[in-house]
Image (cartoon, rainbow, N blue to C red; front, top):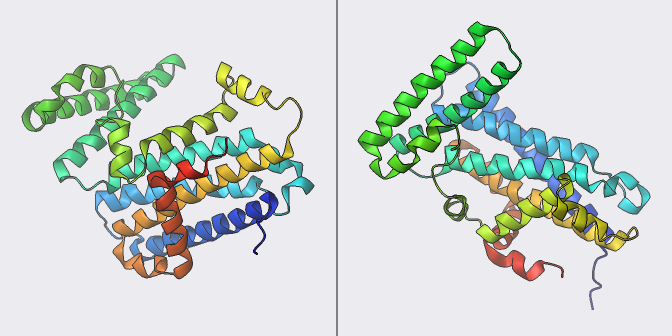
Length: 287
């Protein structure tokens, strides 16, 4: 009978998988940069490459703080709040990557999504510049661009997407990033919405100082190595799942990279990630 692997052995396996995915992603990114350096590319490829690079930077940051030895021999492996502060951006970055770049929608709708996203960002910039009392010219430049963006958004909605008219007021106030409910975006990406909510919330618990965060961590009345290892493996598995999805989708932007993900190892990792992200995770949740 095969023995069950220990939690520390599971951690080292997960770490090895994560390093493999990062190396593969970096090679894909470098290959694209070398091929298209100073050559014109379409908006999706250009913007998508930037978001993918941001994803890799978060992943690299995570790998830099994870110990390469059994975690019981290196206490920093149990710095779960810091680890989660890099896990959650992986989730958020992939979510935006799919919504803005990968989702299979018509060009008009994709343009509208990007314009709303840009407008939302500019309204935040306006507030920062105004609060810091920075150069008035800088503020006016951002403000004028925001006004122009909003008029374009409003005209597009009125003429092409009348069903979105109800969002115009909230867009104007800078309160809209996504034009679709997160549940719908999640399902289109092939992610069970309950899974998305679960991984986002549990990583947030370790980051925030809200009541739920303090209550959750206070349940460790004394240091519980087994429970900490279980959570650590859970977070590494989350990183693996979203990383394999990100690499798979990046190839949709650059089909010439397809041979790089036909590797048997990657396909097996992706198969497991798809299983977990689409609902199989429910069978693996530890009570």
